[in-house]
Image (cartoon, rainbow, N blue to C red; front, side, top):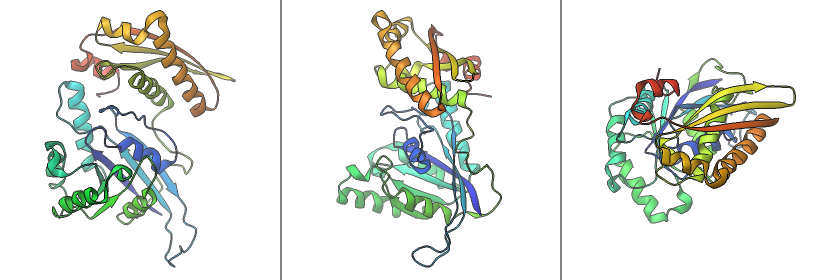
Length: 304
């Protein structure tokens, strides 16, 4: 069996989490159209047993690939941002191959150039993925491809649409070429090592990102105070922390309607994930400037 670890890196909002979900065929990482949705590294486990020779007469290998979805690499504005960027860059040294996702030309801005400079310093095999090809004109795709190809630091370059699933299997095969025979790290039916408490907290945060305006969600953290599995129901109590009193009012909404909508949407997704009824309670509290507090970041699981 070929096994190994694969880092997924890139700027915020280029489709890293969408790609991870597409690889696994299940949603384990939250996705929104807002940048910096992912705050923690999330591991997705892809296990595939080969079915003998493929259509080209080649051996179809048994595979277990552990994909690590990382926060978007960006210029930090607070301690949370510093943690997120450090977590992403730290992944470079822990993996057997790196997928670098882009959606625009290198010359379009400094963000991708910063990542390229970091990648150029390591010897880990690197695969460039040009995402969102369903939205790119062919000539634009060719320009992006040529610009990155001329750098000479990528072992392969592929175009995909993570949202549509286009060429995702080709990417998996490409990654597999850089893996070696090794032990099976996780049981075959396991798709993530992140605990369910973490996943349900992320589901709540995703719904907040979707329901609220731009300035509010990034100052929000979710803490699961109770997670109790009973015979026919799972009882979950969560606290939503925000940085300003005005934000608390926005999260709750007039007559509590906004919070009820967030709760209803989160509960429905949790029930689909857990395969059981969910009783969800949520409260909103203010913790000013928590994103610059080492203690708060540690309590919320963002720092050791």
